[in-house]
Image 1 (spheres, rainbow, N blue to C red):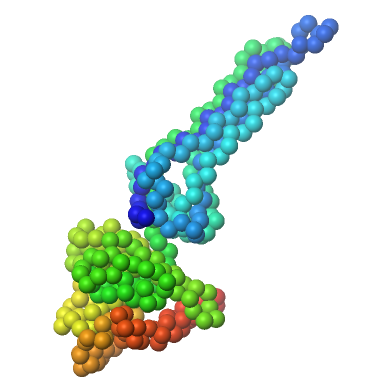
Image 2 (cartoon, one colour):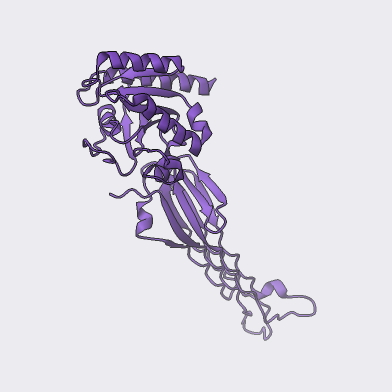
Length: 335
């Protein structure tokens, strides 16, 4: 299934029903008073989030959403019913913007959250509203008002507890498959992952956490080079960042600096986030080189973990460290 994280769509709320012009027709009452009913209000277009969705794939097949118009009023003071709402379901983390101005209208971060994005028009008034002492038989009513009608832009920023970043071929997809039941494509060449991947990490005595594998960043990603620009937004909502490095590379330190530079250029807050450096491919890296890397990151105030995504060495220890990090974060949040 394709991953879509941005789409343009049109919403049209329902028009209000028209008011009715009607008069009582009763035996022995030749000039009965007005009894036209009011029109019903048009339906709203409502956006609602669901944690079951992780992509905007539905917008590939549908780009217009329209609510029902209100029913016209009838005689005998019969008011028209309200038009049915149109409810759109989107993933948690969706941002709705005005398509022309780019203004953010709503940022939906909670499961089950809803927002009225287009309001239905009010119903017209029946002729009884216009009766007066000088005009007891008004022969006019008002039409319903039009519902709101506009083009919008929806962007998705994945909400995950942990985000995996690193240069292409650092081993992020392999690590994700070790930490969760996710089954991303894995191969020994760059840009294997062409879209964000999500996995669920199950921890003892704790709620599960979501891990997002962000496609490989390269130098210039924040300016649109490579794949990074398209998916950098998905790292913004993660609580922790795991920076995955190829420990066997002689340029591992420079590789780390490249990605950090791109994160800072996109959003300076990202480099301030809690980061754990993952020294991957320990099965082929020299022990001396791994020790040098650990010492180098320690001097920068960064913790590191040594693993082999291929053989699984160090994965269980990493899970325990992640559990401790999440536990500390949750305790701090609840204080």
